[in-house]
Length: 60
Length: 188
Image 1 (cartoon, rainbow over the protein chains, first blue to last red):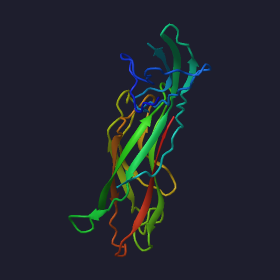
Image 2: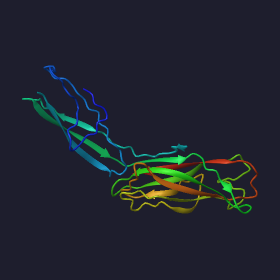
Image 3: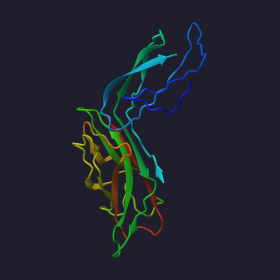
Image 4: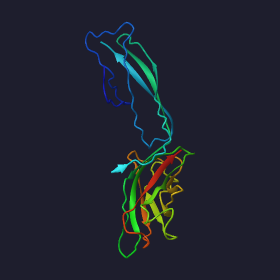
């Protein structure tokens, strides 16, 4: 349930967590958290910026 | 060795908001989105060479000279921003008997500097990186460089140099003397 130092991508799906056979969550759901880090480059112009991240979960 | 001497920094508001919209996986898959937001603000930082030794070379009583290297980091606000690097002699030469910025033994004795450096890229228009023949002061901040709106340095910093000249007055008693100069960088 933990991946460290993963660079987010606009082209590739990157892992947040992976599951194995017979993994089953609680009925109320289980928690997962992401801690984000963004470079503070002086080249960035001042202002407000936003981005959208889409999470996908799958199971077979 | 570099020592961070002074930094007047406009606080970077870099709050990363996290608003989630959970989606429950159904039929083997599902998606949810979050919006990451960040506010990039004006900011400035500075590193300064810890020591600079003034020496007199050539003819007798040639002025003492030296230079101090700085690395600066800056981001000013688009359209309305500005900033500066300034210098002030925060501790005059000591011990007594030698040069003095505030009370020189002879009128006209001076610690002066000429600055130069690389302008910030990415919108460096309006930055002034060179000031010549500036008399250092124990009471006033004097300009080393000034920045205009939308000036942004490299992430590794940009360089600035201060070339010092100190009058070599025969009235100075022999010995070693030190003074402290504080550089301040600011950005809005």
